[in-house]
Image (cartoon, rainbow, N blue to C red; front, side, top):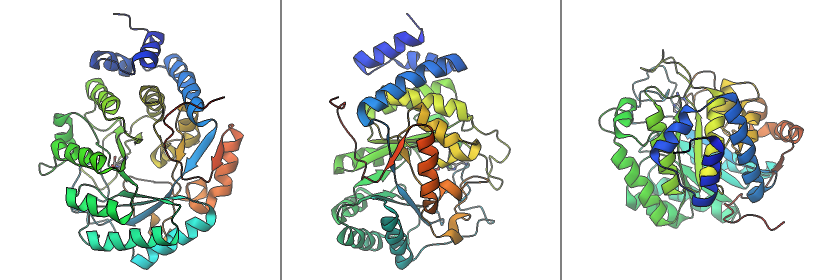
Length: 354
Ligand code: 5AD
């Protein structure tokens, strides 16, 4: 078997598929030279679909109350140090108004799994947003729910749903989550969301505890097969009040390496350069864009709650991470040759004509 990087790039270009063993070799072949080869190929692919355009999404963290107890996450229910909050409907809508004025055309309502955000409440919020601004896209990121619930949200007008799969290996999944959560149910949710007609986003943390080249190979294979419209990957960053507080952080460079590979596996994917990447390393978000990402999600939450939505330590939420910092963000993207556009940023399924 040939196992050089160019062979993998060619095979992805012609067959859009590699074997698990090949993905494992790729995960194990991370070094600066190979990262640069993948980066160049990914940048070319991204430009073929999206030119130098970067889409923005207004991220509204609607609450940090969560019934789950994921070992990595700062808003897990056992964390008694987390200052809990839940935005009111009015607060959420005023974030949307503010974002719309700033030029955002997509809003992401993200939060913990909190039964107070019932189907009725969410339906009302979604209908209100779509009634007032019919041209915007509404993305929901509120975890695992029933099929009926997903259907109601879709019928109310929600367009997209983000639910990271976290890891495609069930043993690894069990090391990151308590027994009441399963990979099986996560997969059920993703499958149903897709069937219902949402744009679906999966994703995982890079460098999460117990991750191996085998589990990464499974993640890449899963992405190849699911063909999600969106895929969120960012480095694991330890949070001081979680069981994983002493675990090492993921690597920003390895995250960028995987961003490039994901762009090559599924070229049209909407791929964010995440806040976690920007938090771990200065200019991390720029590096993510250079590696093949084409989406940025500035924070539109009310300033008073941003620190409370602490999934991990030292989360960035000011400057160009904040929606108000849009001018700064535009400047930093222009400096590396990319243009922030105010567009819904739907997926483009074929390469551009030119
Ligand atoms: N470090 C990095 N990412 C995290 N997430 C949760 N906790 C952490 C952490 N400590 C990610 C998970 C989740 C998303 C909303 O944030 O992948 O799906």
